[in-house]
Length: 398
Image (tube, rainbow, N blue to C red; front, side, top):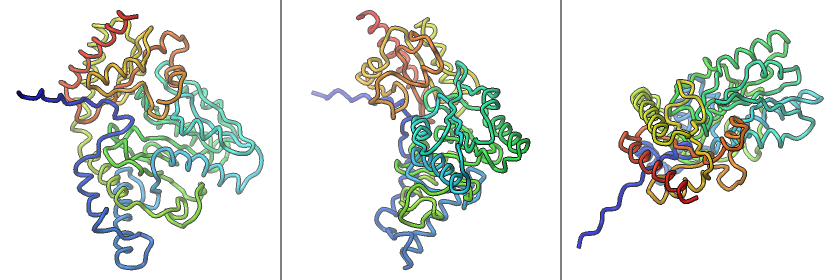
């Protein structure tokens, strides 16, 4: 008797974590065993590791249109966000007295929202509201700025709904405020761009940012590595201690294999991004249209145009629970989520969806499908069919 062939699972939770590219694994392989020197050592093996790390730094810098000295390797997005916020505030307070102000928005990743609330000392945290698509109101930002504002921290591509913030306009507002009020380099602009590189070209000069977060696991690279772009190291202080690595901003032995993998992943995206984005966008639009036809009351969360990255699909189904939909879809061989993986163990629903929709019903049954550059039309067709089946069955069983 022949065994039934196991059906391939469809993975659509790429905003949480992506599969490591085979070319990335190949680039990393020698540095696990054959080239194992500590980059801080003076012997030949150490010097070789040091060169590997610096070569990777140059690659990362090139993809961002930055300088190598402006790249600080970290353990990932959460650490980079913490270093940007706490490091900037610590540096400012070393040189200034009095209350400070920090500005962020209600749709940020928790590694930003929780960090700004944990800033020690006399700090006013201003949380900007957003419109129904998750865009920060520029006029509210202008009104919130004052001479006590040290840093503005905003997410470039929202990890739950895919909204792309207009960072060029935001950075222009900050530059104009600095010039008009003679506040020098303050307030700094930090952006969490962890979700951006797969879909968008990043140019730190065009964006006008002072600090920018990236995360290896979001770009088909390894987990446990990321970086913080720091335009001027004079405006940030370390928050970890015990070594002089990364120009004194991030102590600890550089994880050479991870650094190599991260750089390779970004390099591949830079070369191949234009090849797949259009097809993925068309597939996502087909999915939206198909669901609207078969489930008329489905709610699409976030914008439905070029202000949303191509690979994000976020939907709400009134009177259902998102967790139940995720579980049923998992049984059907499809991995999706209710939103940020960092909130998976928390109750109360997504703070991002609550920010978009004030009525409780619109917050019901929220799921996120985050596509990869490899997601096929067939994957989406199968997913749409099984999602319609799942929603129909769950409603009938209530």
